[in-house]
Length: 285
Image (cartoon, rainbow, N blue to C red):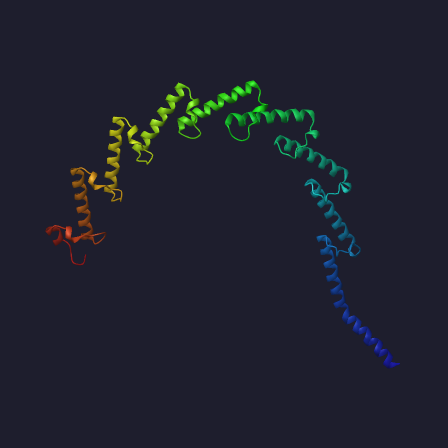
């Protein structure tokens, strides 16, 4: 009898000692099941969820369905929407369709527009088309223009062409210019060439300068060359300097060289020092 009781007591102790391990395993299994349900996996077992977990999962599903319906996903289930959600969806879809139609998108369904919306959008699209035709930018449909709008477009295009010709930009069709616009374009072109020449730009055409402009340009080029020589730049052309300018630069360079040799700072060429200057240079320098 004593042995039997001992065995029974031992079995109970063993069961109690294994209980924490079993509890942890079961808890881990329940947590994994909850994760599977939240992720929408096939391994989800809804019957093993607690009431609060099931309610939370259902709420998440309803919210996701609302998002799916708003984004027009195939997974949208309209039958599960509440009345307020269905109304809000209908309003959002109508607004989106109005926007699509106003933007000229293929997703536009004109049959769902109200009469006022259809008329307003048609007027806006007509104005957009008129603007594109006048600016020569984007897709222009001239077939939708009225005779008055067509005349507006023609006037605007002629003005744009005159502006392009005056600015020297493409496309410029000189054949479409009036006599006064032609004179303005020629004058603007001459002014651009003059500026290019006087600024030393490569686009300069000296043959198109007047005698006075050529003289002014030559003076400015000479001054730029003189400054380049003073600054010791590689663009200096010493052959273009006058005798007086060459002497002034030579004197300045001699003074710089002597100062460099005297202070021991900067490039020094002792061979260019006078005898008197060489005597003032200490050996340490």
